[in-house]
Amino acid sequence: RHHTRRRTLLLVSSVSMALSCFLETVLLVMAARAPAGSASINMLHTLSLVAILLYMASFAIALGPLAWQIGGEIFPEDSRATAMGMGASLNWTLTFLITVTFPAINSSLGDWAFFPFGVTLVITSLLIAKYLPETKGRNVRQVLDDFRARAGLPPLTAAQRQASVEGAVRRKSLV
Image (cartoon, rainbow, N blue to C red; front, side, top):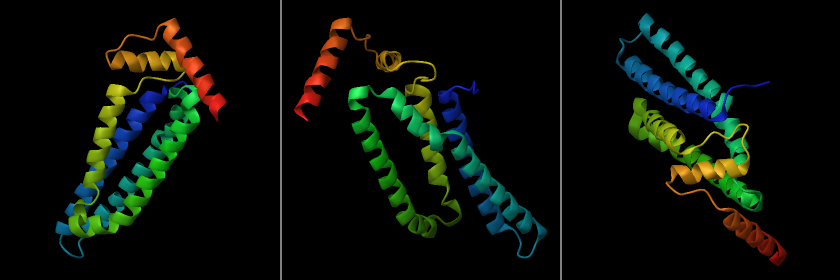
């Protein structure tokens, strides 16, 4: 049985991925400045591979799989399919854009090509820390109340919840 909280895993994952990107950048810059044929170049290339493996492992422990699980835990049932579909579409669109644009990024930034990805992961970590509530062991209502509290809004009243449910039922009957 897993006892680690999802939010904590996402933070560890995104911070580790950011550090891996920054480490990769430092190693590539150092390798570019090392004397040709020196033993230090081999060591820097080996460490560069380790940084990439650390990145992949960090993604695999949380940011890859948990994003899908948490998505299913933060949306109410009436909007979950639409929200998850939109999230999947955005994910694959951005994956495509990164794949297509990385050669140009690599050409223009050279040894610094991983740096912008590290910055993006730092921003991701900050957004997770500030806005994402813990979902493990909590129902959707508790998670949504936590989102509202983080936005400075009061929890929904019973009447507001009922109106939301009735609206969802009406929307489903129109489909």
